[in-house]
Amino acid sequence: MNETTQLPLVRERFYRRDRRSVPATREFARWALRDWNIGERVDDVLLCVSELATNALVHGVPPGRGYRLRLWLCGDVLRVEVHDSGSGLPRVREPDGESGRGLLLVAALADKWGGGEREPGKIVWCEFAVVEGGVPSRCVTS
Image (cartoon, rainbow, N blue to C red; front, side, top):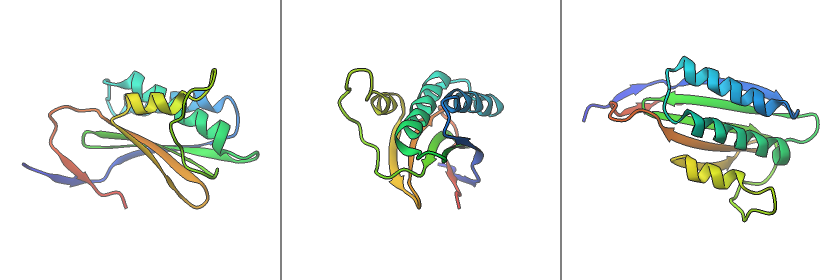
């Protein structure tokens, strides 16, 4: 199996705590996917971007702060990350009325998802396989 090492393609943007930021994150992600010629799984990716951004806005961003959306593409993997300054790690929970479905949707649509701590706050991420039958690649991310 031929394996190559490459740097990921990265797009990122910071958003202030504002209800209009979620549609803006979706539009930014749509632009990045179009720029990278990704035509498959776009609806799944955009829904997950919306859910992660909404969770950051509602649960992870204190007043006066914001969150960062980072998208990276390496080989056949697209990764979506949302960085916020809130405490605690995400968890899937039972839906409660009209809320609590965001991470259930992310878990159902993405190939992988998770979260981790950062200083300050956390990162919540999900990944998608976007190219079938491509040459495996190993990304250098640091």
